Structure formats: structure tokens, C-alpha cells
Image 1 (cartoon, rainbow, N blue to C red):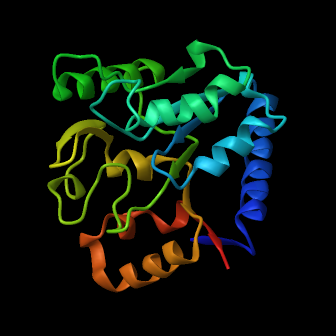
Image 2: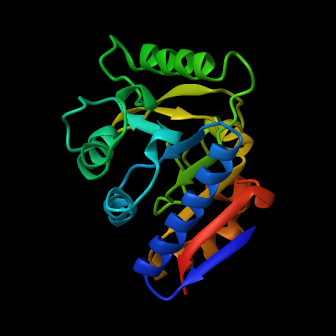
Length: 222
């Protein structure tokens, strides 16, 4: 696990952007594209705003979502809408280069299957392996839509529907997250990093504790 510590969120964001730019350059030199999975929630809002204002070669990037609530794309609870409003609408990127989870299916299960099909097509039926997987962390230690003590922690899958009291959801699997080349955990407040440290004592029942340490980069305010 690599800790990336900065004094404030702006410094943290600037460092993150420099990493993204370097990763894009590496891909461009090999005539390849960067596959980058986005997270939802409130934590990345300032990050997305700053990304939208940065000189990034988006033509070499493909964007994906780690999870989504089964709501309309226009809903304030949609992770897609969050990214669209703060990032997609403000950058020069083709619609063919971002892959939101479709929630206009008849059921959440069909939505999950549809996204699995999208990913298999993108990776040409080979192993689903993203370059960068950005994650936030919930107050209970959940990541994407994988929650504490849930069966999704122990199962291997590409995508799956998750039924919660608040929302039905679609999530990528923990195994897919851990397949990624690099996992970026965005802990943009002192409260978040304090919680993260406390979770370490609670073992594998906490989703964030199941991330592969050799691939994990923790971004946090010192």
C-alpha cells in the first residue's frame, strides 16, 4: 500500500491529476488507451471539477463506473449525473469513450447483466482488468456498492444487482476491483482517514480491508 499524503485537498487533487497525466502518456506511447473507473458520492466532487479544468488528453481515456443506483440518469442520486454535470459536460470527450451503467432496463438484474456485457465486449471477452479504479469509502467502510458483512464480499462476479433499503444498485465485484492495475482510494478528509485506520482492526468483514495492498494507493490529507 502506498500512502499519498498532502496538507489539503487541493494539493491532493493536483497530485492525482499529475499521476493521471503520466499514466495517459505511458498509454499514448504504446498506442493504447487508459481505462479509468469513476466513483460516485460526494467525496470526488472537487476532484471532478478540477479534472474538468485540467489540460488532460481525454481522447486517450475510456471512462467507466464502479457502481450505480437503479435510478433515472436525471436523478440527483445518479452517479452518472454527478459525473456528467461536473466532468463530462465540461471536457472534450466522445460519447463512445465513456460507458455508464444503463438504468433504463426493466429490472436492476437486467441492468447488471447489460453492463457485464458491455465490459466483456470492451475487453474482448478477456479478463476484465482496468488500469485505474477510483474508489471512495463510505462511513461504514463500504466501497462501490459492496457493504460490510454482505455476500458480495465473498462472491466473484463482474457485475451484480444489490438490493438495499435505500436503493437498488448495480456494482462491480471486489475481484474486478482487485484485478485493476492500480486502485486509488480517495480519503479526502481527516475524518475519512481516521475511520480507515479504525477499520483495520475489524478484519475482512469490512469491504475496504479487502483491497489488494500491493495495488492500493491511499490519497489522504495529513
